[in-house]
Image 1: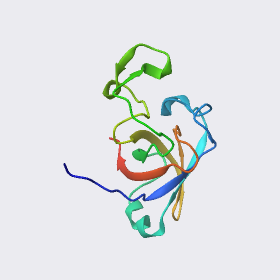
Image 2: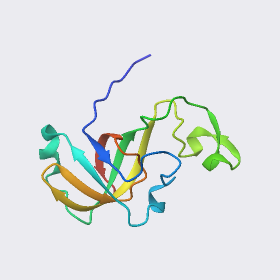
Image 3: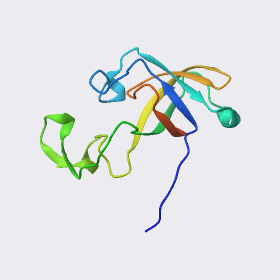
Image 4: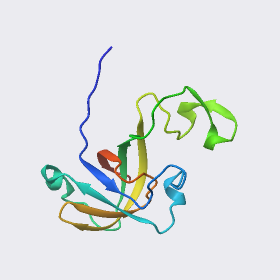
Length: 129
């Protein structure tokens, strides 16, 4: 079996400090703002990214301490396979959110659509269209 190792490209600075208070889905975050602090060596990757754009943000569920193949949807709903949910208890602990860019200042990208915890490691960004 192959093993893969990924390094973060940056970290989210979020108003949500714990899982209990974080939205379960990016569409539930309302007007909450967060910042992606991109590591300096990745700044050139922001060329062409502009306010108003929607990006897919892939991140690591760094606070999830285990994985399950079946979970209750949204914690209390019907039992489902983890691949049919957005649960953080995934075999590889990778999450994805759609974020809307509000502003960019050097390596700081401010966005809406935050459903990640403060300090979340970001693995990649991709255009959402």
